[in-house]
Image (cartoon, one colour):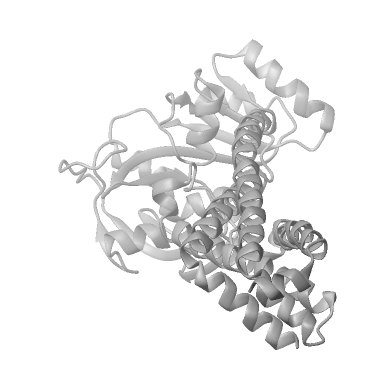
Length: 389
């Protein structure tokens, strides 16, 4: 009887497939909104927390703290300027800092930034894979796999950088870089960069000042995490930023937007649920004679209940399937539609375990919306319905 209930339910909703698909699409839009926001929040939060690991202090030129974080930690924006390496080194000696990383933006190659850095920087990167070797001599370059794929550079290839941080035809021929390794990192923003020793970047720009773009460091003492940025900000010409504080502001902004978007998704789910309720009740009115015949042939109200329930469950399962189809399309086009997709932690997208709440809610809602029509069906004199049919 179980398979019979499913078959009867399927034939019932297939007969009105246009309305069925429309309701499932509305429901899927609501579910897709909730699933997307959940993935976006988790992916961005995990990426921010991961990228800021071992970074309690950022020293850079005066400007916007948020821009400084995006430019020098996530490598998304242009930096606000350079800072004197001599003044910076003197300042670093005054405080108890660990894991100090010095970076200097050089040129670019085919639109991919060339970042001069020290060994502490690439030793701080968590590599998924590394082909070749880390830079060992001047002009060695370590390339993220996305940069390698778009430039067709391979280990041992030689290339010249172009001036500035955007691609153009004027190349800097003072020094050629040689690809020593190609890597894939868990921090996705690294995968589009070209890394070289900071002295190599300075050597390419002969005659210019050897300056840093930024310095990143870890602070062990919790109290000093609050005090050191303020002291540097007050006693020097440079800007000192606490990345954790700025990132919390970014996350608060993201959470506010997520709540607003979730409200729209919940509204769509409610509209779909009421539509399902009306669709099922309309179907019962049309097929009342069939239900009466089931009772007349010895069926129970439980058999009728299963038919009614399976109609809604099939609609709910169809909506879940459409939701995952939408997530697949979003995954393939995330660079176009997802904000901050450059730093999005990819592992968070297909962590299906996080979907358990909205999947369970969808199935519970399907069950709940079938109770009303089933109760209403019991109050109808089925013997009269059987005679009328």
